[in-house]
Amino acid sequence: MPTTNLHEFTEIDAAQLVAQAIAAVQRAYAPYSGYPVGAAVLADDGHVYTGCNVENAVYPLTICAERVAITKAISEGAQHILAVAVATANGGTPCGSCRQVMREFGAPAMPVFIARTDGSYRQRTLEELLPESFSAADLPGA
Image 1 (spheres, rainbow, N blue to C red):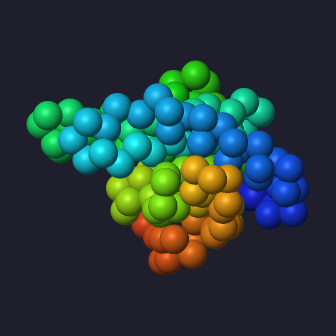
Image 2 (cartoon, rainbow, N blue to C red):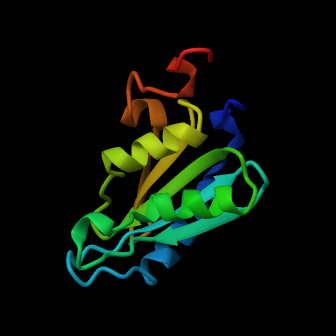
């Protein structure tokens, strides 16, 4: 898995990824929680993939914006994700399931931009959000 150099991401790159995540918030289907979420993923193929949360009346079938974006990237041929931006009205962080899916396809040093829909954001690494993570490297034979 490629490592991510945090210095590869300039403020304008982060701002562009955040802007795409904010735009994706508008496409969210969140009639039950009333909590729309958008995400944008920069993949190793150079493309940005977006996603939004899609809720379901059977709550466990809901899928988060981050997992939609990551799944789109992988289904289109990307193999790794290099950065993630997630946007909500209040700047909420990715849930535990999303953090684990990020770890499946991203390096611990991968930047995660956590944004509010007003455009402000903060940056963390995946390692900060998911310390001592479990990955394929921990499985026998890895």
